[in-house]
Structure formats: structure tokens, C-alpha cells
Length: 472
Image (tube, rainbow, N blue to C red; front, side, top):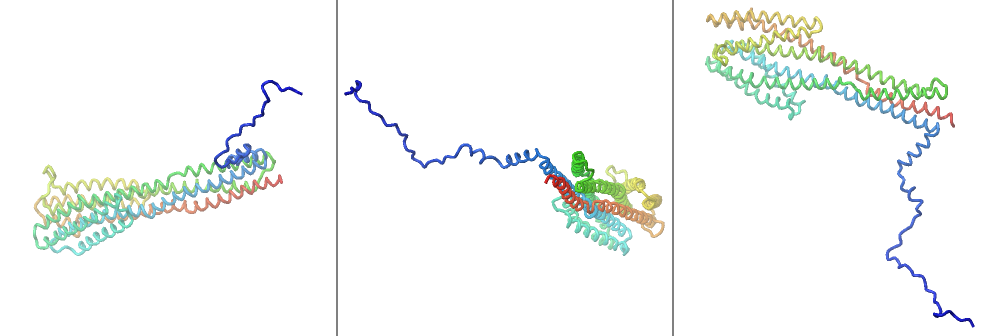
């Protein structure tokens, strides 16, 4: 009988069990599947592109896509940039310059109305019908142009605020003129006071507001013209890149296949070259014409408008010198205020006529300016004689020399005004023609660039596909 070892029999112990989980069992996935499921689409695409780039067909597909993208981008950028330039050129012709011209005409109409009011007052109780009619026409024209400008201008801008000011002051001025006329018909001296007050309202408030409006609209014209002339550097750069890529691809194709031409790539290169050449030439022509419109047209218009306005103001001051009869003196009391203002205005008129003659680029532009300058000299001579007559106490004789039908300063003034009107009409025609030519040089370029870019992109893809077909 076998004896057991001392210490008694040994019992086997069951292995300890882990406590049962209290929650739902977590799904277990093989560790090797997690990276594949979380891999990004971009990384996968990059891997495929790298794999494709190791073979010639893959490289050709990538090159074809890049070429098409570059050509399309060139067309799109050109269409966008030139559309902006063409829009600015449209604004120059159709909005900015007409508004600038209207602002100048508002100023001129107001100044002429003031001149006619003073001329009619000097004629006495029976104001000439022609003078009354011209005054009404000037006021109606100023009111019409203000309504037109208001419809095309935002009231919150500086131009809109000046228009509001003019609309508020114009009825005040016309009311003062009517009071001056009513008193003048009755032979009351109060009429002269009302006329002088109306002239002060015109000179100190209405005309400065009109001048600020003209400056604002002319500034907008300058900005629009500058935008239209700005070089499309982005489009030119994109065109050079696209054309360079196409040339590089054809050279690569020639070196690998010894074939001189690939028809698809050749068409794409031709399309890109046409767009680039059209862009460069078209914008150069547009830039030159718009610059000519501003330098030889708008600059001359600006000088001539100022000359005409100074002639009108000088004429009004000349008339008021007789109306006031020395009642209004300069601040130091040494001279007649209106006579001093007349002298200052005539000096400015002479300087502006000399500048306008220099700016005129042909005989048609110089001739009316020279005629105006001759009439200004005659006007000054007659004015000196009229002042000498008045200083001798012959008021009626001086009045005849100022507003008479023959050999008067009024006749000389009309000759100056007529000549300046001719010069303005000529320069306006010069501006419009040059600006229209500049706008026309850009017409069709945005649509043409887009169409040629699509053609070039399709041709580039077909040319690359032709090369790919050799591997199939």
C-alpha cells in the first residue's frame, strides 16, 4: 500500500475568474484595419498621383490637366479684369463725363443768370424782353440739370449734398431778384440793395456750391479714367505662364517622340497667343485713347469752362459797378469792390485763354480760343473808356458803353462767350471721339478671351490624348 507524503493529500484549486462585465461588450476590430479606414481621401489621391507620375501615361494625364487649367485660368482672369476696365471706360463715356459737363453747365447757367439779372436791372424799369427770356432760360436750365444730377447721384455723397444745397438756395436767389425787379419798376432805390444782396447770395453760396459739385464730378471722372487705363498685370502674367507651359510641353513632346507638331497643342498655343496679343494691343490702344481724351479733351474742357465762368462773373461785376455806384468798397475802403473783382476775373480769363490755346492740338481748337482772346482785349479797352466816362459824371454815357447795342462792352462779352462756346463744343467732340475709341478697343475682349480659352483648353487635352493613344 502506497503511503502518501506527510501533510495529507493536496487538493487542486480552480483558477480565479475575472468579474463579469456590467456593461455591454465592446466590439473588437482587428488592429490592422483601423489605419485603412481612417486614411484621408487627400492622402489616397496623393498616393495615386505619385503612382501615376512614375509612368509616362500618368505623367501625360497630369500635364494635360495642368495645361487645360492654366489656359482656362488665363481666359477667366482676362475676362474679369477687362470687364472691369471696360465698365470703367463705359462710365467715363456714359456717366462721369456727362455728369461733369452737367455740373459745369449748372455753374455757367447760374453765373449767366446773375449776369442777365444785373444787365436787365441796368436797363431800367422796362427790362428788355430778350434779357428777361435769357434769365428765365438760365434758371430753368440750372433747375433741370439739378434734377438730372440728383437722379444720378447718391444723396449721401458730397455731390448729393451740394445738389441739395443748390436746390434750397436757388428759390431764395430768384425771390431776391424778383423783389429787386419789383422795386426797380417803381423807381425805388431799394431795388439796387436787393440786387446786390442777390449777387452776394450767388457769389458766396450758390456758385461755390456749384464749383464744389463740378470738382467732385470731375474727380470721379479722373478716377474712372484711371481705372480704365490701369494695366491688367494679372492677366498678362497668367497669359505668359500659360503660353510658356504650352511651349514647354511641345518641346518635351518633340524631344521624346521626334515629332515637330502636335495639332492639339499647336491650336492651344495659337489660341493663348491670340488672347495675349489681343489683350496687350487692345488695352494699349484703349489706354492711349483714354489718355488722349483726358489730356487733350477733358483738360481743355476744364480750362475753357473756367474761362467762360470767369467771363460771366466779370460781366456781372462790370454791371454791378454801375448799379452800386461806389456804394460797395473793398475791405480797406480804397477801391470799388465790383471793379476790383472785375479786374481780377479778367486777369484769370486771360491766363486761362493762353493755357487753352497751348492745350489745343489743332487749328480747329485754337481758332475760337484766339478769337476769344482778341475779343477780351477789345472788351478791356471799351471797359476803360466806359469807366473814364462814368468817372467824369456821365452816367448815361457810361451806361450806353456798357449795355448799348453797338461798340459796347456787352457786345464784346457776347463775342467772347460765343467763341468760348465754339471752343467747348470742339473739345467736347474731341473728348467723346477719343473716349469712344478707347472703349471700343476693349469691346468684345472679355467674351473673346473666354471663348478662346475654352477652345485652347479642349485643344490641349485632345493633343495630350493623342499622345496617350500611342500607349494603348
